[in-house]
Length: 190
Image 1 (cartoon, helix red, strand yellow):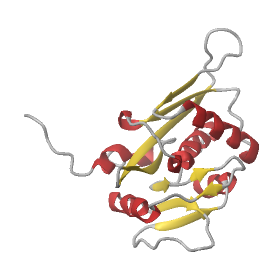
Image 2 (cartoon, helix red, strand yellow):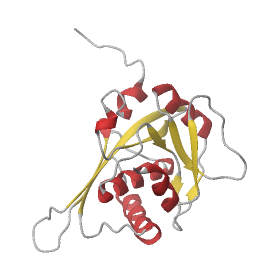
Image 3 (cartoon, helix red, strand yellow):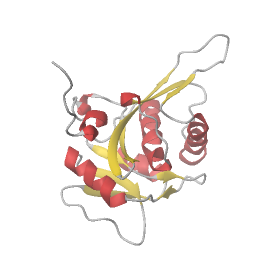
Protein backbone atom coordinates (compact mmCIF):
# COMPACT_ATOMS: atom_id res chain seq x y z
CA UNK A 1 0.00 0.00 0.00
CA UNK A 2 2.50 2.59 -1.16
CA UNK A 3 5.91 3.58 0.14
CA UNK A 4 6.84 3.20 3.78
CA UNK A 5 9.64 5.16 5.44
CA UNK A 6 12.80 3.35 6.53
CA UNK A 7 13.26 4.59 10.06
CA UNK A 8 16.66 2.99 10.66
CA UNK A 9 18.66 2.22 7.48
CA UNK A 10 21.55 0.76 9.51
CA UNK A 11 19.28 -1.93 10.92
CA UNK A 12 18.06 -2.73 7.42
CA UNK A 13 21.57 -3.17 5.95
CA UNK A 14 23.41 -4.60 8.97
CA UNK A 15 21.75 -8.02 9.01
CA UNK A 16 20.56 -7.69 12.60
CA UNK A 17 16.95 -7.54 11.48
CA UNK A 18 17.44 -11.19 10.48
CA UNK A 19 18.90 -13.83 12.79
CA UNK A 20 22.55 -12.82 12.50
CA UNK A 21 23.69 -15.40 15.01
CA UNK A 22 22.60 -18.23 12.69
CA UNK A 23 24.68 -16.85 9.81
CA UNK A 24 28.28 -17.95 9.82
CA UNK A 25 30.32 -15.61 7.65
CA UNK A 26 28.94 -12.06 7.56
CA UNK A 27 30.87 -9.15 9.05
CA UNK A 28 29.32 -5.77 9.75
CA UNK A 29 31.02 -2.41 9.39
CA UNK A 30 30.06 1.25 9.67
CA UNK A 31 30.56 3.29 6.52
CA UNK A 32 29.78 6.99 6.19
CA UNK A 33 27.12 8.21 3.79
CA UNK A 34 27.85 11.91 3.90
CA UNK A 35 27.83 12.73 7.59
CA UNK A 36 25.63 9.79 8.62
CA UNK A 37 27.08 6.45 9.69
CA UNK A 38 25.45 3.46 8.01
CA UNK A 39 25.99 -0.14 9.10
CA UNK A 40 26.37 -2.64 6.28
CA UNK A 41 26.80 -6.40 6.19
CA UNK A 42 29.57 -7.96 4.13
CA UNK A 43 29.20 -11.62 3.21
CA UNK A 44 32.00 -13.89 2.02
CA UNK A 45 32.05 -17.41 0.67
CA UNK A 46 35.24 -19.35 -0.02
CA UNK A 47 34.53 -22.45 -2.06
CA UNK A 48 36.23 -25.29 -3.88
CA UNK A 49 34.19 -24.57 -7.03
CA UNK A 50 36.24 -23.83 -10.12
CA UNK A 51 35.54 -21.91 -13.28
CA UNK A 52 36.15 -23.25 -16.74
CA UNK A 53 39.49 -25.01 -17.18
CA UNK A 54 41.92 -26.44 -14.64
CA UNK A 55 43.07 -24.20 -11.85
CA UNK A 56 40.80 -21.27 -12.64
CA UNK A 57 39.25 -19.94 -9.50
CA UNK A 58 36.38 -17.50 -9.53
CA UNK A 59 36.58 -14.07 -7.92
CA UNK A 60 33.29 -12.21 -7.59
CA UNK A 61 32.99 -8.96 -5.67
CA UNK A 62 29.64 -7.19 -5.45
CA UNK A 63 30.03 -3.82 -3.78
CA UNK A 64 33.79 -4.06 -3.17
CA UNK A 65 36.51 -2.55 -5.36
CA UNK A 66 38.54 -5.34 -7.01
CA UNK A 67 41.91 -3.61 -6.54
CA UNK A 68 41.20 -3.14 -2.84
CA UNK A 69 40.02 -6.75 -2.55
CA UNK A 70 43.22 -8.11 -4.10
CA UNK A 71 45.30 -5.95 -1.75
CA UNK A 72 43.36 -7.31 1.24
CA UNK A 73 43.86 -10.89 0.01
CA UNK A 74 47.62 -10.28 -0.24
CA UNK A 75 47.71 -8.85 3.30
CA UNK A 76 45.64 -11.77 4.61
CA UNK A 77 48.09 -14.23 3.05
CA UNK A 78 51.32 -12.47 4.03
CA UNK A 79 50.44 -11.25 7.53
CA UNK A 80 47.84 -13.71 8.81
CA UNK A 81 48.94 -16.89 7.01
CA UNK A 82 45.53 -17.31 5.38
CA UNK A 83 45.93 -18.05 1.68
CA UNK A 84 42.71 -18.22 -0.33
CA UNK A 85 44.34 -18.28 -3.77
CA UNK A 86 43.44 -21.94 -4.24
CA UNK A 87 39.70 -21.32 -3.69
CA UNK A 88 36.98 -19.40 -5.41
CA UNK A 89 35.87 -16.32 -3.50
CA UNK A 90 32.54 -14.54 -3.55
CA UNK A 91 32.03 -11.22 -1.72
CA UNK A 92 28.70 -9.45 -1.40
CA UNK A 93 27.73 -6.19 0.27
CA UNK A 94 24.07 -6.49 1.21
CA UNK A 95 21.52 -4.07 -0.13
CA UNK A 96 23.48 -3.44 -3.33
CA UNK A 97 25.67 -0.82 -1.66
CA UNK A 98 29.18 -0.06 -2.88
CA UNK A 99 31.90 0.35 -0.28
CA UNK A 100 34.02 3.39 -1.10
CA UNK A 101 36.14 4.04 1.97
CA UNK A 102 39.05 2.15 3.56
CA UNK A 103 37.30 2.11 6.96
CA UNK A 104 35.46 -1.00 5.74
CA UNK A 105 38.67 -2.98 5.04
CA UNK A 106 38.69 -4.86 8.34
CA UNK A 107 35.13 -6.15 7.92
CA UNK A 108 35.84 -7.39 4.38
CA UNK A 109 38.94 -9.17 5.61
CA UNK A 110 37.12 -10.69 8.61
CA UNK A 111 34.30 -12.05 6.43
CA UNK A 112 36.87 -13.72 4.15
CA UNK A 113 38.88 -15.15 7.06
CA UNK A 114 35.75 -16.53 8.75
CA UNK A 115 34.60 -18.27 5.58
CA UNK A 116 38.01 -19.67 4.70
CA UNK A 117 38.63 -20.97 8.24
CA UNK A 118 34.99 -22.09 8.62
CA UNK A 119 34.73 -20.27 11.95
CA UNK A 120 31.99 -18.00 13.26
CA UNK A 121 32.50 -14.34 13.97
CA UNK A 122 31.66 -13.52 17.58
CA UNK A 123 27.95 -12.60 17.48
CA UNK A 124 27.00 -8.92 17.45
CA UNK A 125 30.57 -7.72 16.84
CA UNK A 126 31.19 -4.97 14.29
CA UNK A 127 34.49 -4.09 12.60
CA UNK A 128 35.83 -0.63 11.80
CA UNK A 129 39.32 0.03 10.48
CA UNK A 130 41.59 0.48 7.53
CA UNK A 131 44.11 -2.28 6.75
CA UNK A 132 47.64 -1.27 5.73
CA UNK A 133 50.03 -3.24 3.52
CA UNK A 134 52.00 -4.32 6.59
CA UNK A 135 48.92 -5.93 8.11
CA UNK A 136 48.56 -3.09 10.60
CA UNK A 137 45.17 -1.63 11.43
CA UNK A 138 44.75 2.11 11.01
CA UNK A 139 42.20 4.30 12.70
CA UNK A 140 39.55 6.12 10.69
CA UNK A 141 37.66 9.39 10.96
CA UNK A 142 34.43 9.82 12.89
CA UNK A 143 35.12 6.66 14.88
CA UNK A 144 32.88 7.62 17.81
CA UNK A 145 29.89 8.24 15.51
CA UNK A 146 30.42 4.87 13.84
CA UNK A 147 30.66 3.05 17.18
CA UNK A 148 27.56 4.84 18.49
CA UNK A 149 25.59 3.71 15.44
CA UNK A 150 26.64 0.10 16.03
CA UNK A 151 25.55 0.36 19.66
CA UNK A 152 22.16 1.87 18.72
CA UNK A 153 21.41 -1.03 16.39
CA UNK A 154 22.27 -3.66 19.01
CA UNK A 155 25.93 -4.57 18.60
CA UNK A 156 27.66 -5.53 21.84
CA UNK A 157 31.29 -5.06 20.74
CA UNK A 158 33.34 -3.44 18.02
CA UNK A 159 36.84 -4.37 16.89
CA UNK A 160 38.85 -1.25 16.06
CA UNK A 161 42.52 -0.36 15.54
CA UNK A 162 44.66 -0.13 18.68
CA UNK A 163 45.86 3.34 19.59
CA UNK A 164 47.84 4.66 22.53
CA UNK A 165 45.63 7.78 22.55
CA UNK A 166 42.61 6.02 24.08
CA UNK A 167 39.28 5.05 22.60
CA UNK A 168 35.88 6.67 22.26
CA UNK A 169 33.73 5.84 25.26
CA UNK A 170 30.30 4.73 24.09
CA UNK A 171 28.07 3.30 26.78
CA UNK A 172 26.69 -0.17 26.11
CA UNK A 173 29.35 -1.43 23.70
CA UNK A 174 32.72 -3.05 24.36
CA UNK A 175 35.80 -1.85 22.50
CA UNK A 176 38.07 -4.64 21.23
CA UNK A 177 41.35 -3.06 20.08
CA UNK A 178 43.68 -4.89 17.71
CA UNK A 179 47.08 -3.81 16.39
CA UNK A 180 47.04 -5.92 13.26
CA UNK A 181 45.07 -8.31 11.09
CA UNK A 182 46.26 -11.45 12.88
CA UNK A 183 45.26 -10.08 16.29
CA UNK A 184 41.81 -9.02 15.02
CA UNK A 185 41.21 -12.53 13.67
CA UNK A 186 42.38 -14.17 16.92
CA UNK A 187 40.11 -11.91 19.02
CA UNK A 188 37.03 -12.11 16.82
CA UNK A 189 36.57 -15.65 15.51
CA UNK A 190 35.09 -18.45 17.58
